[in-house]
Length: 155
Image 1 (cartoon, rainbow, N blue to C red):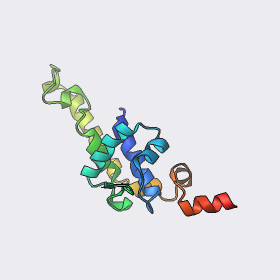
Image 2: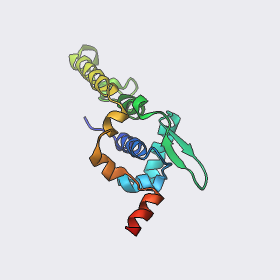
Image 3: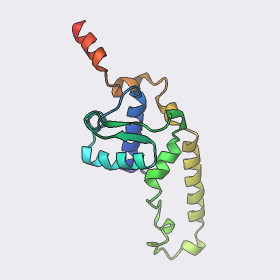
């Protein structure tokens, strides 16, 4: 199993918003920190906003921030938002399935159960679980405020 780049970027974006909860982030800041193209990130942000995981603000002082408290953002819900449209295997796609074994295959049922267990495990994990008390992540994703940057420059 492999996650799509969109799901990976969605989680990186949400983690960055959670680490920097005291400010509105700009797309270019997230793209730079997450090593992503701004165009690809824009598509991810659009989906995150449609799902209310983030709020977007237009204009000169615009950007994005979390749309829900980080404790209420389930990692499983984020995965489903980005991965649900991608069938795990051909037999899970009712339109494009050409497998002749579908009606008699027990593997499909086992894969379905495994996927539900996978998503169930992620449902128990919140964005807060990924971010809180994670000093390493905070060091990588925190953007200093102007006041902090100025005080560091004067020190």
